[in-house]
Length: 513
Image (cartoon, rainbow, N blue to C red; front, side, top):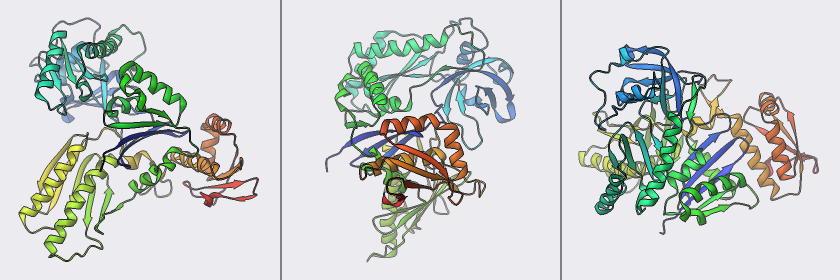
């Protein structure tokens, strides 16, 4: 089977969604909700609010609703604190090695003073009432490399396996003779010449210089904003094995085209402005796959299934044999289901972007050799995951524990919000997700009917939210698509429900899509 990789970008009123498809199957999904912009990668000049030795951490005000969390372990090099905080004076004594964590003369408990100013970079989005996690180890990502100020080392992506290519790239960086900066060459640097790498380095260096420039803004403030999600996905995931990138928004298409023209011209011909009727996600069966990824139960081809449950502390995955009986012994049947489950779990973790502590309850196996087979099957399939993963052996109780790097909210919590009825015990689609669903419905119906005038009935709270915050966006959508939409209230509708009334047909047409 020929391998194909495609990227689909859908821009709607409520969100921007980027889907990565491999052989037609959805493997990764990135979502920017209009009212909740991502923070990871952003650099802030903040103010130290509290230093708590008992927690081995400090809390930094960066302008977010909740103070950010700075563990002492994230003060990777004391020079980063000295050079990026407290004073505008230059310090020539920079970091010497990537292995230096903290200098002996630096004591976070004493040297981190309340109300002092400090530069920090967000490494984890706020989640579940917790503020963003930050670090003093500032880095700037270019298209070919990552620049780490106040360090002295050269790193090369592990995905570049050819030893001669690794040696060539290392020599290029050495010739540039850049002091007091660590440089990590990304996978995209493979095959690039001296001038291309130097050009990307200079662009990244300019961001560092802007950060260090005098700034009279009131603290806290955003000092550096990382690339928007579409540009970031293109930067990180548009590789040589990507066949096509489809974008349904002309404005976003132009932005990405300009970005590629400046950074990676060879991929320009892969861009395509999607102009067909209907929703790009609906037409290409992405919407259906997204809905499946939100369900608790995941069916296996054998007839078994996974049950994926989210708790406050962890995610629990239970493997069940279900309808699978087989003709072999119980041990052999269980092994077959477990191996299939291991492959599917690796896919689901990546697709749902599940992070933190994960506990997997496979079907019990008696033989140690069979448990090892399941362990290695899971480990091998996790190698395709870009997130950092740590996997433990089976416990005495037959459970397998693992952790997966959490950078942002997982898919379930991104697309959902706490239900006002059950007070957080259950989840319903967020208002922005409902808005995206309505837009998708209208685009699909538009391909089947000439109707252009509609009344959309909503739950009172959802109706008020749209009226108050989405008025201009709705007007823009109507103008762009030659539609006339009137929002109305139906108190019998649940918050996640909507009904569409056609004024030409004088009837409800909700079920016709």
